[in-house]
Image (cartoon, rainbow, N blue to C red; front, side, top):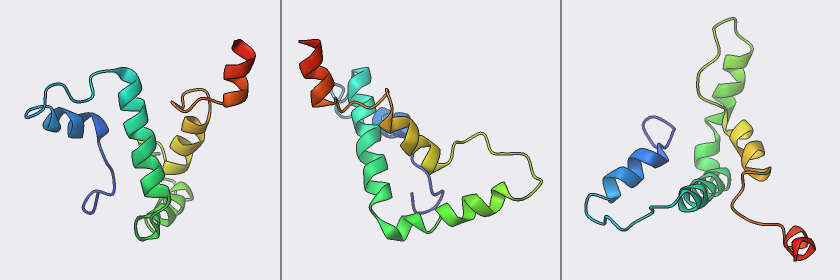
Length: 94
């Protein structure tokens, strides 16, 4: 995070599973881990300063990066793909 300003959740889990093979083996667990990492990032101002660099790149004529901005990922996670369930929707389904 300090060097590249990004976290590869899949690679981090892969490295942890070398010593703990039972760790994070379901898709929902990956989603939860990603949600936690994104929440941590969004609540730590010392890392949020790098978001300003992303907006400066959007104004230039260079091709856009293959990576989504953190804000786009946050919006995506708050949508249908979030692991956290809305209690009202759960009550309606029962």
